[in-house]
Length: 84
Image (cartoon, rainbow, N blue to C red):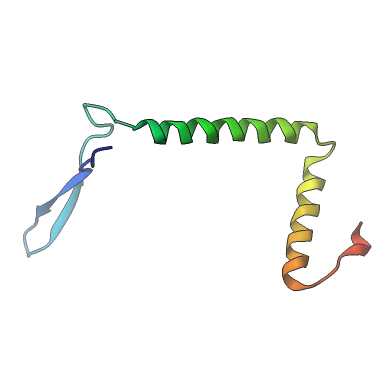
């Protein structure tokens, strides 16, 4: 993957420089190597799988709350058994 120059510094009166962005997206587009595209494909597939699993949960909010409480109680050494 080649480096893309996203802008340039323009000298200003008083000795300052201003950063000016190039037009986006670049005229020649983007180049992605095969390894990066494979990682993107895998991440997209895993997100879809996670979305499918959350649809099977009877109450996703309760599941997320209980997971968050378990994580936090493990960090603080606190047991919230009375909540469940």
